[in-house]
Amino acid sequence: MFEALPKHVTVYEVGPRDGLQNEANLVPTEDKVAFVNALAKTGLSRIEITSFVSPKWIPQLADARELAETVDRVEGVHMSALVPNRRGLDNAIAAGLKDVAVFISASETHNKRNVNKTIADTLRAFEDVVRPAQDAGLSVRAYVSAVFGCPYEGDVDPARVLDLCQTLLETGVYEISLGDTIGVANPLQVEGVLALLTATIDKDKLAVHFHDTQGTALANCVAALAAGIRTVDSSVGGLGGCPYAPGASGNLATEDLVAMLHGMGIETGIDLDALVECSRMAAGFVGHDLPSKYLKAHIGKQARARRKRERAQSNSQ
Ligand code: HMG
Ligand code: MG
Image 1 (spheres, rainbow, N blue to C red):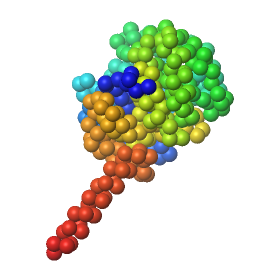
Image 2 (cartoon, rainbow, N blue to C red):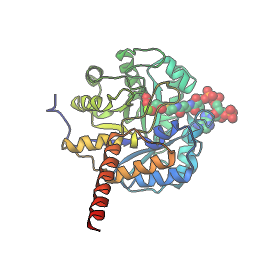
Image 3 (cartoon, protein in one colour):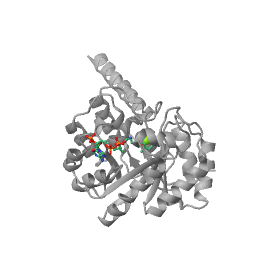
Image 4 (cartoon, helix red, strand yellow):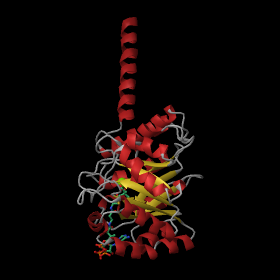
């Protein structure tokens, strides 16, 4: 199973978007700007910073334009945003972004709850987004949600996922991220779905996006890597969830992913310590602990080292 593991993995950071879209309290724009700027210095090459969606649907990201206009542009770092329609695309272009992502669900009910349209109407709306974005020089990614299960419909037929992925690739998107929106996938299921998809779709056109509701995201990730996938979405600290998917918890935590990959000798180009500082920063401005295991272990290790130093000092006095 492990012979096929890649030497390098691209980590696609979604914390500022997928993470912050689900926070109960609004995060001030200046905190988000500092967060994205810090992330851009960690060695990450792809960061999804926000969404140009309706502020009535996602008030947490209503400052998309200001954020995208304000963050530092760093060479080699692609900053992207979700766009559901032409208006979102126009706003993303006006804010100077060169990368956008469209999103759709493999489940009719989740799609309707998420964007208030049928799957067919969503695909029609993409005609007004994907080609015009490319004509304007932008790269377009696509997400397919509920690939491994839907909060409303339960099981999702992998053949529907395949169909949808093929249709999306025909529109010209450069990559499709397969979303386990509510974190119900297991490694065997991941292996099965990816075997079906990669029989006809180039592995380099697929990425995986696991939420960690049941603690299986890292295991699923290893199954995806063994199946030849080389791009993994994650969120610093494990921030996140989908507001229109009840039960969805945070994404796989970026530092948990990076620590595991580095431990396995797989390169990411990311500075893990710098990433942990971003996670601490996020925990500070959201005002609660984050689920990342690596972060908790790191904080514990630092606290133990501090207590040891303090004991040594008091013994020497
Ligand atoms: P709607 O209500 O059906 O459509 O929303 P509408 O055209 O009637 O628009 C409603 C209002 O929003 C109008 O304003 C529009 O002008 C405005 P009003 O006239 O009422 O004042 N509007 C916009 N405003 C700003 N930017 C826009 C825009 N478009 C319309 N682009 C719509 C349809 C798609 C807009 C809405 O359903 C929406 O914004 N949905 C977003 C939902 C969302 O962001 N969900 C989370 C992201 S997906 C996810 O998390 C899954 C993922 O992580 C992968 C995984 O985990 O599986 C990607
Ligand atoms: Mg998500």
